[in-house]
Length: 171
Image 1 (cartoon, helix red, strand yellow):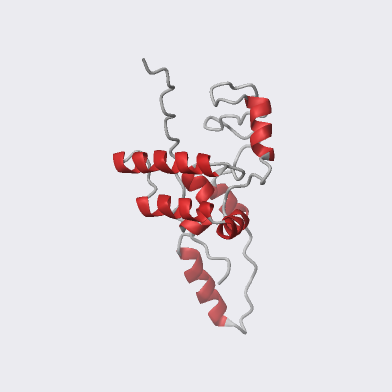
Image 2 (cartoon, rainbow, N blue to C red):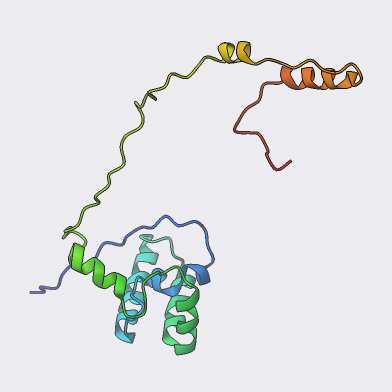
């Protein structure tokens, strides 16, 4: 009878479309920066299976590229310097995660201290004035008669409603 543990379920990351060199072979294969050759080979084989079953968005080409990069010492050092994997070579972040969350993801031992508040029903303590009230309180200065085009320009500008999300401040 086979008592092996079932293979882990892949974690699906929703990343922006980035070049594989920027994502890095560590994230593509799901290995730590200090992973040995056997771990890289095992993860490579697992990722190939997942890719063929459609369980990961990584292409077979990217998975094979990750294995090739991590097999070469020079390429691995370069990938370590430019990839998104923020952990250090000695696995400092992984050690901290294991210390505070346990070795398995389900062993949650740390929870965030600051939880974001729901702002859907938030009402500011200061009342927001109505648009008509604001317009009544705006006093337009008298325009000099020497520049008659200013009045026409300002009136035409004031007739067009301004969408604050579409204002281009760089223009």
